[in-house]
Length: 522
Image (tube, rainbow, N blue to C red; front, side):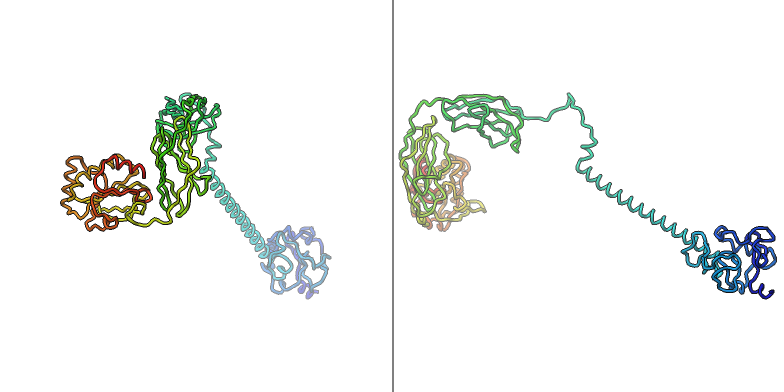
């Protein structure tokens, strides 16, 4: 019996720690059931309390190695002789694991295997530390997620705010519109004033007005106040004038003038006003006469005269319908010259002459006449030839000029020399032509094989009498250009049209009226 007790070992009361006799359910020391308290209520200090009670009873402060190797009931902690399925002391199953608070899944924690290793307290402490660490880690992860999400939200809100600010959304949403003030200065608008109608004829009129600020001008007009027609000035100015044409005789017209900006937006408008065209005083159309055609390979010059001042236009085409037309020369004159350009070489063209007088009476040539363009225009010095191109240096200058640079203009080309007695008046004649034709006519004087000092002497003599010449003066020292034009006698003058076709050649002196008439016919 003693051996059996030594093998099984003593039992200790879980309440007071006293030794409980074998087979006793009630502790004789404290009178309580020594094995009925739940282990989880003892906490992680159960073994520490038992050790303390053992020490207090004089049985030592540790469990022997032999006792640690014994089987114990997971319910009442009684030492079992072997791995029995049921505890003989408490009657409970030994297979059911002891319950430790929140430490069921921690390795090395309080449980049957932990008790087998003799480390229940350390397992429970490790479980608590693991749970605490995992809880702290989870909290930290949650805090980090919150911080990242908050940062992303702040960045998105900031970008949206920046875009809204740049687009002016904040200003439009949060800016309170100011109430209109009586003292606020309005935007300056050009005011229309001084409207005047003049030069009224049977088919046209002139309307003039001013604006206090520079602006673009426009006239709306028509037979009713709905207008329907418009004529616009091209320049931005404070003084405006628009010519109306194509009106009906003896008709009342409504009109209003506008001031506009560069984009055509209306800034101000006058009140509706009216004027009436004149009745035709003469119903007879102008009489056309003396018409001639000077064709080249790609153009033709049509000239004619009218018995009274009238406009000029040429209708032309490859058939008698004459569907093409030139622009209208609106000058009211009696001598007319119109160039027809863009023709094909070697073709027969039909043309009609059209002139309209100041009363709107129209004269159109019927039936149409015709002309034939040249197959090709040869280079040469004869009338009808294409003028040879050249490049010559300007006198007393480092620059040069070429004939091709003047294409599209009428050209007066004069060859002369200082030693020529008849050339004394040539400088004065060329300058007079230049003064009379400031635009559209190029005047070129060419000195032949003259010494520079003699040329300068002649020019100085001219300056002393009439001032500086304003036309081009060139030097043909080796007569290369003179040979191209077959110049054998000076002065020699060539009249060249806008297509570089020679239309007339004159030798010797002639007066300015003759020169002007030839230029008009080009």
